[in-house]
Length: 302
Image (cartoon, rainbow, N blue to C red; front, side, top):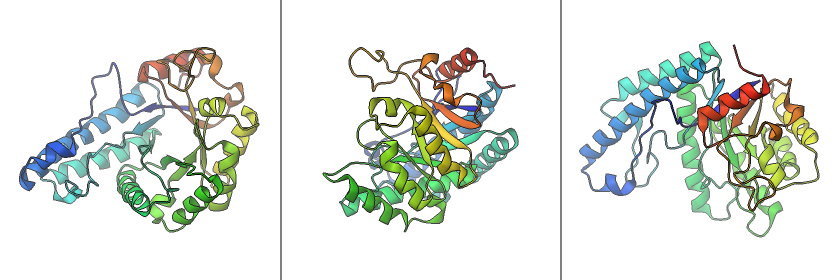
């Protein structure tokens, strides 16, 4: 079993920079490209340092922020990597990240923001979502990330029709996107039971989030949901991916959806133990939470 860190660190001196479209719009095109080039170079350096750090900490996976190269797909301030003054150094760093993660067994993934809506009835929303996914697929190819994980999106009054729209869009996606795309059950609309038929029909792996399942149950036990999700990965001969978190205020106090700083080991499904899988730890304390959970479960990697 490998555990994954999501995007950021709290104690390690590694940071990622971003910017806003508003800030970029106030610049000339030349200055704009210089600014985003510096940000992208900084983030490429930080990513390489991140994979080296998680390896040192015994963590086996790292989720890359969807703002890794910020505002790249914006309709006005968007840019291509080859336009940036420091593109060669950036590409060298991405290649170094790819080689390090490959040689040291670090699994990389992306989890785009909630505005990715392949089930939307609005064409412009779907087109923007596809554009963003294609961009992140390019980044994924550059660093050898095998997962781009999304939610099914909104219900829009009819869950069946929404999933039919998603399926129709998926069939036309570029291979660089479709080969990496995964679907995750969420805590409001789509359960494991809802998504399994789509995953089987389209050969999409299902990322099982056990916290979401507990907030939005569907009659399946955690063992059943884990095994059914595992089947979607096994069919493609890929390692299963799951998510774990604990509620900030506990399960008996108020809204259980917000994530806690750490994961209560009692929330870790016993049926996951002894399995070959990747488990992203979605906790506010980041690498501290991953290290604590690994220690509490006796699953520290050598």
